[in-house]
Length: 166
Length: 285
Image (cartoon, rainbow over all chains, first blue to last red; front, side, top):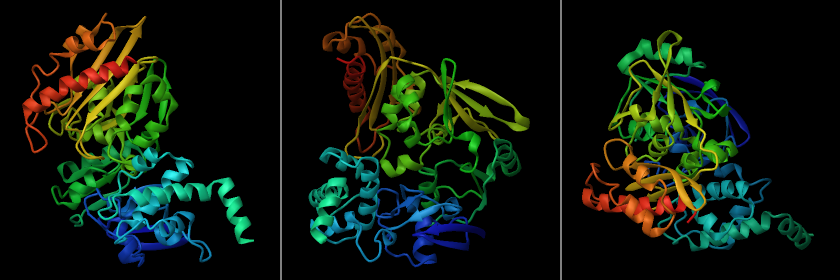
């Protein structure tokens, strides 16, 4: 067993883990963060995508011991003060899911895409999500949701939504 | 699935990593970015007794310039290569090839050194390393290092010049400043291994090709360099007709695999088509 210290969704944890424990297993079984799902178990599908120190990784393809001393954000850590993250809100509004299984990973990767490129073209969105498989939607509404979120997160977008809410 | 049990070591220096390798020998597997190794462990295709993680060794990270060479630490991620202006300026071919590897999440973790030592013939880093004439710096016991040319590095399927108890530490790439570059990768679905890939980089002079370097992915048990094509391209205008003729023999002497993605003859056909496209794109035509 190896002791690790990891910050997950803003909370610090210190745990003994077997070195073979995958990060996704630690999140789900160790911390009960079942929002992050295991899809394919082969590192293809991207359903288990989380952020490690702010960049997206497939958490079935990282050992928990590799996350020692680092910071993890899961889908459960995106919403703030009960308010959905703009990407979550856009997935909801654009009906960017059917069965919903790919959604946690899809949203985490969409956040990564927008962090690096706040105003992506449709092509850039599709390429940015190429490591995330959806077997229901045909991706169309997912791409729309990311475009909508990009607008909402832009300085102009957040100004207008504030105007509406005030 | 989850991997079989193993002991985990996370040395913080190359010297400690090499010492750990010496101590554990065959029992040990080196973990770089883990994007190939972890699936292998999960599928139980390999079950090492000890995993030596290089992720905590700062000296293996980063990109620097040393005179007329770029120096890339073995643990530098694909994402760091893509973000590097200096790789873009002096070894554009590597950037172009790396951009096609798997998907963004994998590129955040996967490393150039890990890919080179894994030596999957369908991997996208070997061909540009060969074409750019990279030199691989390998650390051994007692602080010794040796440098191996890319052409002597790839020995066979998943087999390189990195011997037992040794560690790849650096990739040194002669600067190809101002050379055009293109990596033409053929896949059926997104984020997959190359069925065939062609890495081409070209120095143009007055509309014709002054020098060319061409590497092939998945056309044999190792990446290959197409020297006869490189020679045939010298002095040619960057036109479809001239390049088509110069690259026509690119598949000669290759021994590509036959599998569900295509048989060997199909791959040989692909190699000629992709080489033409890659060279023309690299030449800016």
